[in-house]
Length: 485
Ligand SMILES: [Cu+2]
Image (cartoon, rainbow, N blue to C red; front, side, top):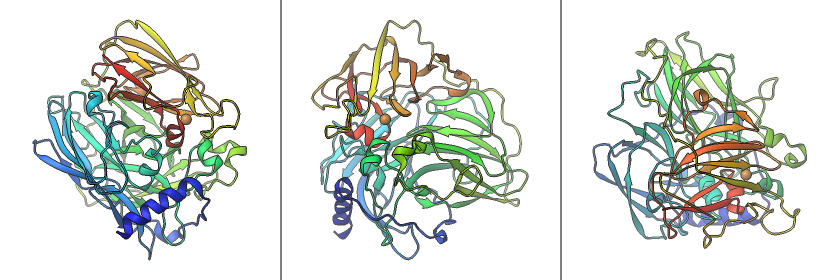
């Protein structure tokens, strides 16, 4: 009882009241990386996934009231196969409506788990997911209109790993928790009594709310011991607003092998990587030198908007360029390791032929429209704040379109439900498909164009969403609804 009450108190207070934000002591970093339990639906079966309240040891010496899916904080990794129908019973033991949105799954609107698919307190709902798309790292989270930010912040989010048993073996490391790791990266604030503080004030709503502690799989700046070889990291930016610019402390390069929608056509070697809200990436890091390494991130440009950043908490910088620590990798040379054999090319990488577009749609992401007046910060798309009763766009099944998305004032990660798309241009410059791959989130800094086609239906009763994945923007109205018929 205490847990639920304190969750509601925290979330309600967070929306309206300022709160003191402390900093966890340095002693909290360095906990072992939590490896999420797996719900394996690949052999069929029916599992339950319940939104519950709990207490989680995140800081030393205090417990934090949190929520999660079938665990006290965040959710298990759900594993599914292409070609299967995955079934779950979704439950809700909290005191407000929740949902389970399957972010990145190509499934019909009725299965998508968006704001219309509410699971009321004490109720259950059957999830039936017809899975037919390439292997990818996806995720799931609550998606209740005006409550998504607070739900995700407190823990209603988890990773999904989709495998394709008929695809060619990639040779990528795939031993879960050994050389293949899920990394859900999030920032959070804590009060000194352990409360996870959600307290956006004006700047926190306008530029998205951030935290000064960096968590991976629910632990602050954790450590993991890896074999002295190739290690696959499936990284999800599960933060409300923060954009990460990852790099390693020793500048080592790594290979990107997948993005939101699955494999890239070929390895891409890089030494820094930008990941905005809801984006996923799979990278392979070579630890065969046996040396420990820290994963770091720079502050992002949105945060650096000096006027707005005033009073916003920031993680402690540990490097000259202002980078902060995300997590640490230690190397155990005694562990069995894969040290070579990555293919240069992935033959089953998705690259659908969308054909010629038949239509162009325009999306203007409005922010501070009409000044600072009004209750929602002027957040809207094409002048219309999200309205659950309004269908903003109507698309036709199987037709290819170009969507032109124009941001304002800052970079916005734009997400489209129900499909994956190709990014065509950023500010008039062609995007490189070899490095972007198939996407369901595009970071719009200026103007971007995407090529999109919908092969699943969504009717007006349970439409799809498109929205900014800065969750405060989304909740304030930077979201719209569309049908596919
Ligand atoms: Cu936005």
